[in-house]
Length: 209
Image (cartoon, rainbow, N blue to C red; front, side, top):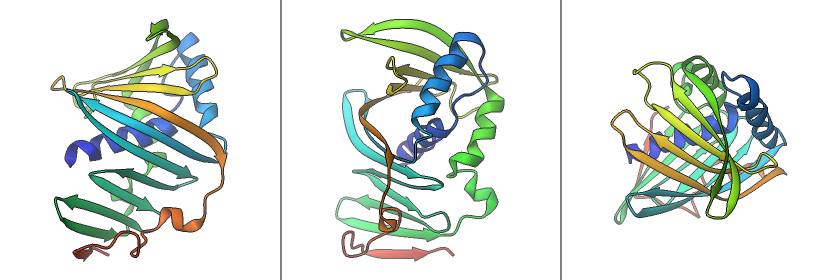
């Protein structure tokens, strides 16, 4: 479960942390990618690959609100309240919280942005042929060894749409996130970012507010 939380934080932060500290061609490509995330609501479907294990997920973002769903964990955040649903076999728990400013640094991409700008530098690695597709490669490297993520490799289509991310952690674990579909300029109903009990009944609720 902690693995999915780490990937969630990196994925949602990447959606808001462009451009990071960059110069020249890297800055141009990161700005192009960033423009894709500036058009209202975002619907991003992805697949996580790790040692042959595949996990599908979906990320919806509108302003400061977001929902993040995989088979292992679901998170809703309406800008005030966060619901985290964890399922283990046939038992499910729902954690309800109203994050403090300090806690928001772990879930809010706007607050995480400053950290990523400070601790990562972007490098342009040019055009690459990946499975017959021409993609632009940008590598984000940590400036020190204390970061949770040591390197993030971003592959971008010519129009700036994200194609894939490769996350490298300090212990050399690597996770590949393939973008299956990407849409922007959307509007979502309010319930998209709140927990719906009829749709997701649980065994236990833990209210941490």
